[in-house]
Amino acid sequence: MLDVSTKKSSKSKTVRTKEGAKIQQEHVELADKEERDSDASIPEEQQNKRIKTTRLEKRRERNASKSKTVRTKEEKNILKRGAKMPQELIELADKEESDSDTSIPDEQKTKQIRTMRMEKRREKLHHKSMEALKYLLKWKLDRSNWKYNRKIQVHLIQSCLNPHVMAKDNFPHFLEYAASIKGGSSIWLKTLCEEKIKEYDSKQALADEATIIPKDLKAAYKRAKKILANMGSVDADQSS
Image (cartoon, rainbow, N blue to C red; front, side):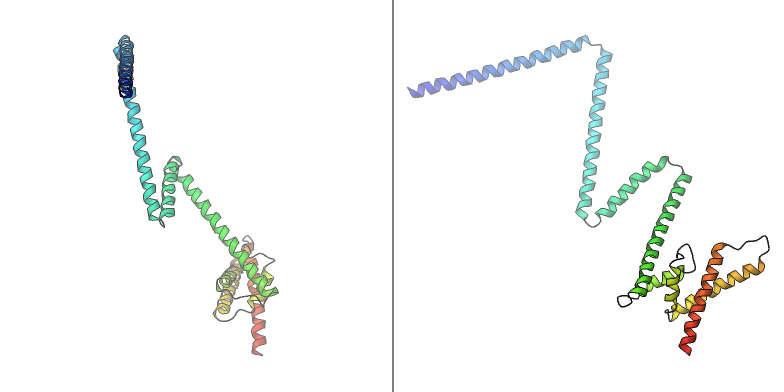
């Protein structure tokens, strides 16, 4: 008895599923028929326009998907390389920036580049001068913990006669430090000072009442005289 009932129930289930599938198929066919009837009422020109727009949209979607895949592949390759990743990303960013800068005129670009370079140079000089000042103050106030630094000494010698690089308040510290410089560095400093004095003297000899000697040259001349006098007194004390 149980087997007969189970067989009947399974048969009824299959019949129901078949009936459901038929009803679903009928609904689909009716929907397609209604769509065709609605499209029949639309003129042919409008239908053609619709077809064209749908095709264009499909093409755009394909192109967008292709560009995305290419970009992801490039990023994957960069990530695989590891160490080269930051440089390549910088190059890509520079390329994008250069493409965006095509609208800017060449004269404006050159001005921007010059200003950027000037700002970088000023920042470097400011950083070097701050390091040099710390070096001098440590030499004067904390000699036991002070260490000789060749690069800073070179910067000090190069900038000692320039009032724009070495400030007026910092020059007396250098004047004391200059007396302690020895060897080739002391000879180099003396030659720089002597050349500056010669330059000033030659300009003063050729100068008329109308011509004015620049203030920077006057300041450099005074500094050179003081450095040589200080170094000369130290040499005299050492020889005696």
